[in-house]
Image 1 (tube, rainbow, N blue to C red):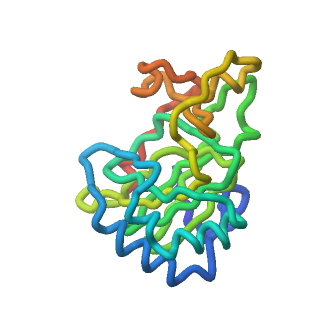
Image 2: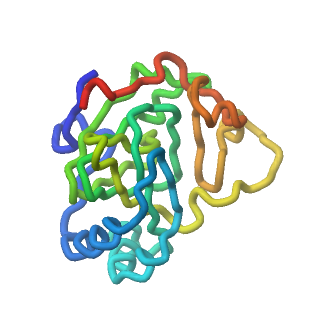
Image 3: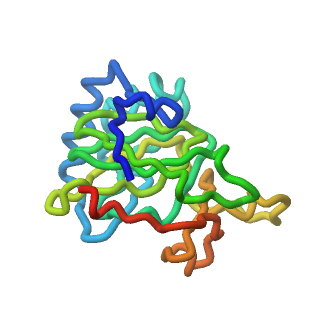
Length: 212
């Protein structure tokens, strides 16, 4: 499996580099570096210290056009795909260390299933903020150095990844809804599948440990 840079033209269908946010990025990194680093992977949808920064207002205004946003983090150690998710809005990521994103496109889901052979890996340098488009399937970052792990900002519209709304499914996509504004496809080998998540990934549950 090839690992592309987010500066490679291959990234353009999936997202883009955020420009003009240098002061906000510096503020965010200063707080992110002091967030926990678990042995596994942990996710916090909203971190109070990040929400209190002037950078939160900048992200709301310049990246979401004034919409309410939540700034959280996904930290730890990981090299496996396990799942892919998408939202109805872009997600913005920023890491204190280099990290890798495993991505696919929503349009590649066929009859409720995505072949993991469609997944591509993208290297994100430390301190570079990237946007993953709403149509980009993604999940937990992967580390590039097991000693350093990853600490990655996750910026999303407020309320995303919180409690799932309760309703009767009306179509196949409703079966994917795992939390608010979170549609998820799990690999059969994943913990999420064992916990009842929709199994929508077929093929290898890729592990990039041999690529880093």
